[in-house]
Image (cartoon, rainbow, N blue to C red):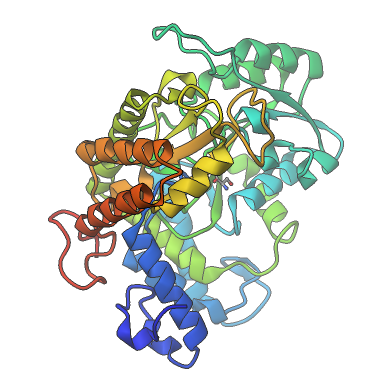
Length: 448
Ligand code: DSN
């Protein structure tokens, strides 16, 4: 257990002192603040959101019920809330060039469910990417409610290839086209959670048009890259785009939907009252803050650096003896095949060893993984968070070296402790919240 909060830095929350009456939670927040700032955050779906986003998330808007939409609420007293939500919708539309935005989904999963509910009748067919090839649970995994309500058909990746000029393990568009022709889906879904290449929208659009299907792009992971101009935008091409606000977009935890104006009513009704009750307006306010931050010129630099860092990290990890799924990365993440590094090492063990060394990431199945999803032969890593903290390509080389060392010496506690100490030193030079932590951070990292 950690010390009392009074002896801790207060970066755990802008309101840490208000938690004095709950020392248990205050202490846990302080411990998490320490973990986030002294260890490497390489989970591809995480980021360090700004103090302004945290302030809005922690605001008194959490007190307000606002079922409905601006101008059409079921409770009184929503004048301010309406302005907040209108601002969030307008900023989302402007950031992505969309005709309509719904900023109420509590999460990306809810956003996808709402789109299915709006556009596809129960039992009708949806074509999406298989979970074990990089898709998401809500793309029809047998474990997800989505597969119980709708009939899913899944596409996957091309076979692995050693040819650097023709990488394998990329979306198999021939398969997408063949399945679309054979199954006549109502909706085709693009998007993934563990796919390291850019996903073009045009081939999906063409295939959808050829069979009269609608086209949803699940932009959960690269939304920030699109906002920052580092990934092509699906917004002008797809009928609907869902995304999460907390990954590369660096906002609060939540989801959102963009769509054409003619689909707005169906999408809005599917979110509320179809799926959710009262929206989380404190989170909607924080989404508005994040959309404004992502529209600033420095966010373009950030998005470019995220991708450059991913490329540097991937190259350095290949040098350590890992195999990169699809031979590399074009976005913020990469998938490592551990088997060429060490045939005995599983993703589960690697994740646990790296946790002990202060390196946080997640195990992940690789395409056609012989091991179970709980064990896996792979790791997924992303650069969104440590890029926010100010790290660049040089640091990515160091990070790859630390990962290789920790995994090679995983039976040696002293060696792991030495890696942990170096990780602490590296993180100490790149504080994600220089204005909240004691002392000043390096130039250029102050986002307050
Ligand atoms: N859990 C998210 C991720 O890590 O990619 C997807 O929902």
